[in-house]
Image 1 (spheres, rainbow, N blue to C red):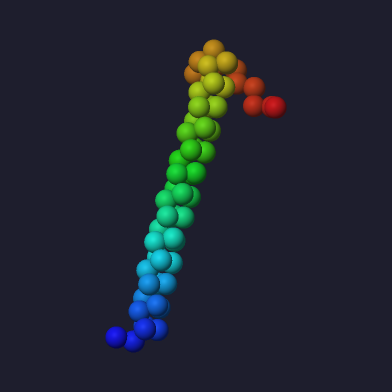
Image 2: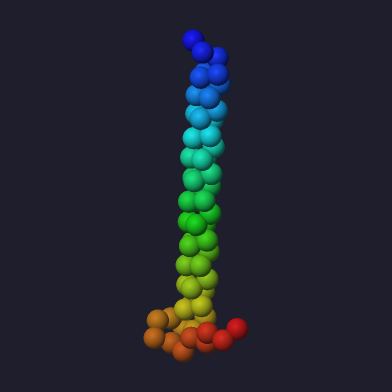
Length: 59
């Protein structure tokens, strides 16, 4: 077996695993941000007295 081919294969495999792990991290961050924004919206609606209330969007 060619040693350089084996090293290239291992490096490629490691790069693929790293890229997948980073992708999962980005997905989790996006979901966390969406959850936080949703919670903030719920608090905003609640502070206005529920749906249909006067929501002050000026901060």
